[in-house]
Amino acid sequence: MKTLKSLLVVFVSSLCLGVYAQSSLEEITANPEKSGGVYLAYPTEFTPQTKTPKGYKPFYISHYGRHGSRYLISNEDYTRSLNLFKEAHEQQALTALGEDVYKRLEQVFAEAEGHGGDLSPLGVRQHRGIAERMYNNFPDVFKNDANISARSTVVLRCTMSMVAFCDRLKELNPTLHIAYEASPKYMSYLNYQTPEANKFTDSRNGPWVEQFRKFQESMIHPDRLISTLFADNDFVLKKVNPATVMHDLYQITVGMQNIETKVSFYDLWQPQELFDLWQIGNFSFYVGTANHADSHGIVAANAKHLLQNIVDSADKAITTGNEAATLRFGHDGNVINLCALMQIENFGVAISDPRELYKVWANYKVTPMAANVQLVFFRNDKNPDDILVKVLHCEKEAHIPVATDIFPYYKWSDVRAYFQGILDK
View 1 (tube, one colour):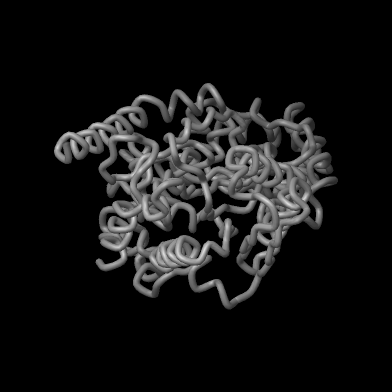
View 2: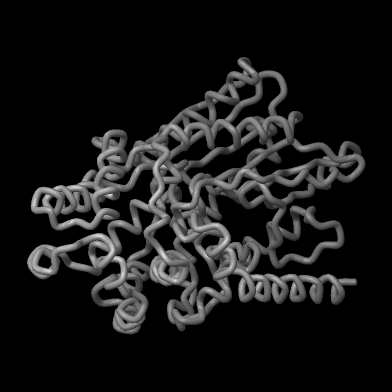
């Protein structure tokens, strides 16, 4: 039976690789918003939870979630484009399409000004929705005056995500006891990078930098886009850095799905351009936060402190019964680290060639806005030591390389031993 279970794990991993190879370009062509990678707004299609095995009830949830949808990181991410188009407008250097883009940029900035890096209203709604579904899917966890721990990184958008999430839980059950915390004290596991990982991921001196530079150069072809927006070649020569303009407009384009202003820029792009620009960002996030083959696991290992906290918190909740949920709020890179370390759905795949990465790994699958990992624990009514756990990634039942014949449920003793093996490496 153990051999059969192990073969099943290998088969599922192989199937995941095949799906990637077939789908990334097609998915982005069909849904250009996925070209935003980590800017993809949280998916809103959910499948029903698998029925809980007879005799078991959920009693504890361990969670790590990325902040919800946000504005671009800084005001300058909007003003670089807006100011350039304003100057071109004043010098009559824009095409008709360029003039229209200028008007759109003004509309966008009317909302985005001063909000660089902030959680957007959509981000609030996302976390309220995740909390409500968690509450409704596992009501036994949130009975009566249950105790909940909620901690976020010290970055405001993460703290605001925590507040949105937990406020919704309190609305659903006002008797819940929720301890809210955002403190440097917890950064050692909520958002941690080792010196060894930082040396590898250094964007100037990392061992992958020159290969990436050549790859990035091969993916950027801005001339067609620039020619559709600017009518004055002299203005382009003196004022326009085509690659920078292309990148900045791409960021604004894919970021629009996360804010309230209903303006689109997808008409500016050809599908291959979006796919190529996505590939650049996809590799950048992969090498910086996942499991690039040349990193030999040291980047994914950034999540070891988080995984240790998950194990320790679960042990405490199982032993004492004093905590119904441990909620943690952080960033995209932390979710990627954790998924790679835990080997959720083959997200820890190791590869080095940026040209092959799209076939096996996609950042929009791993960490859209508000991405989350949940471990839901179930106890046998007749045997308190008999505990099952299932892993949810973005609220979907997920595989990890642990043998089971009752997927999506795993024996906690097996999962804990698997986690301990990771931590002991």
